[in-house]
Length: 69
Image (cartoon, rainbow, N blue to C red; front, side):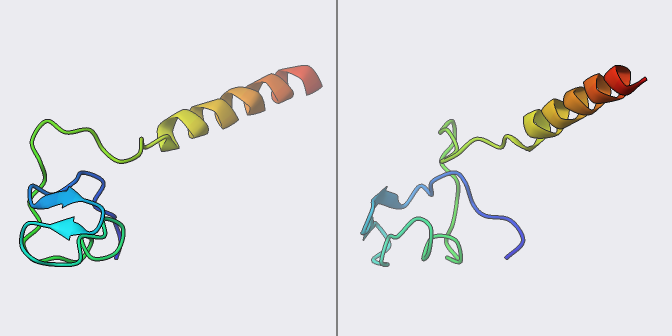
């Protein structure tokens, strides 16, 4: 699977409990469920820090180039 579903489903009650009668494991069963519908207004399970990490690396590279120059 290319992307993971980061927002909990409307049927996901708690770990091990799904209102549709499935296993209800967020990182396993919910990722491939046909009935997945994200909860509106809920926060993702983890933040996507990719942009922040790339900016930090670029900032350090620029500092290193200026130091070597």
